[in-house]
Amino acid sequence: MFSSFGYQGDYIQNLSVSGNSFSAELARDYKDLALYERDEMVDWPDAELFSEKAIAAANNQQVMPENPADWNIETQQEMAELQAGRAELIQALDAGGRTRAPDIAALAQVKYDCWVEQQEEGWQTTHIRACKDDFYAALAALQQALQPTQVAVMTEAEQVVVYFEFDRSNITPRAAQALNEFARLLPPRQSVGLVIAGHTDTSGSASYNEALSARRAEAVQDYLADLGVTATELAEIEILALGETDLAVQTGDGVRLPENRRVVVQVNQDR
Image (cartoon, rainbow, N blue to C red; front, side):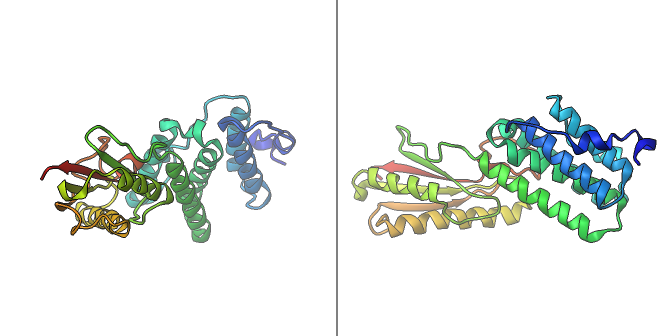
């Protein structure tokens, strides 16, 4: 019944893909979306589009997320939000997401395309919200998977770096492990001062990020205090809230990047 659109319904219905590479995961997810558009939404043109993307991925061709500029998006605000989401997605994909977390990366891309398609139609607000929320949930999981594997870096200058989830200031288990080791390796504390500097990525306003970086630095200070590394034990503790002003990796504004969501603890001796 899709012949007028060139849609090979039987082919996509029976498409079988093996393996767990990014292309394989993408093919399966696009197949599911194509069949949903066909069977549930009776949307033949978009069923054809997503089936073609599934077939291309199954053949190991490069398949990119949709460009919202190619779609009839109603308002500039909606277009700007879609473009920002696509930029974040491509950044995560190009940072190794396709190989390090192929299942999550594929899901994020397909959910993004779902959001674009639903946003163009514009009237099924529940579906728009579902696709959008699913995309951002998958994107957050992908960004989490791309967080630096070396969560703590001990150098000759005695420095530790711990990283945070997006828009969060809680100490993750990996950060806790790093801080535990850091506290164990500290030299005699009466001669040690600490500078605890909080940082953020560029997503959010500068004022919000400054406050968030302060919360992150204070969370690290509180965790170290629970380990006995307190102001009364040390020569000095200085807290800095640097927000997005001192990025580890330079980006434009509005970019979520795990490497920039961090607290750096620097040891100063013989203060």
